Length: 412
Image (tube, rainbow, N blue to C red):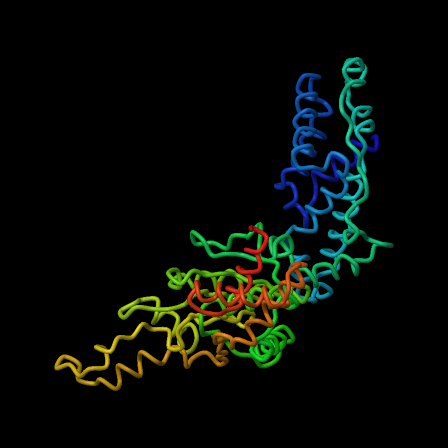
């Protein structure tokens, strides 16, 4: 049995990492290897399809990396256990199967085009065509997907740090159409991008760190004036602790009724999650209001232990309230009780952090910091005068206003 045939048969018998055969590049490569006994036209068709795919995926010069990366992003019993730090508890036979699969994937990833063509049963018949066929370069395998002396430590360390499945491949997600969908281009804002509001961010940072470390922590409500960085703070926390296995899932307020479905999907995963609800507010008689109350405290479908809810709102008490709501009505026997019901949701967040509009000096300090970062060549006097005018036109000072003003300087 030649080398390529041996690898093809081992590739066909992948077990723990069998999921990679559903990924485009490994699947197309396996189809090519499976056509080694087929008529020339069919073999060449598979060859062309495979090469077209790897060109489209940008890995014609790095096949080994594409193949092993697909394995790194696979979700199976080993990757989930490794992400949770419990893979050593798996049966020895399962760990042996992991090693065998890993060695097989690495061997397949390093097969050259010439080796595949030489192993084709009718290679003499396609000799004239084969010389003009494009070749791929294997390149190097993904560094984390290696088995030095058969040890699983290095690859297990990767899963422990990065998670498994789509949670290793992607870092931010959104709840859409009843499922968790990855965000391909997520906001990469970091804690270093902020100026001001240090006290507020420290509260959120400490709470997030406690959560990641498995210590006591609370659901968090960030409320206050618009444009003060509430949402950016939450996203920055997710980015700051990404290497500690933290992921963020944004859930639209109008889909809070789906929370039990989301909880079921993430409850058994080894990663930890921030469930992010942005711009939270409710009208009276809003069904999602009572849903969120039950989730925060008291409901059967509560948040799982590996998740925290971080919500932002421009309202401290979350429910839009009119003066007429406070007037006594003959139809409303227990007015005080109903008012308490209106205010009770925000009290169920264990941590509430207030973001208010900055003072003039703080606003100008933010403008100055942003202008230095952007290398704005303008005097402080002109910079601050323009910033004040810009804020007046916008209707108030805020970090968002400061950012927009500095960016506007490059448009003139």
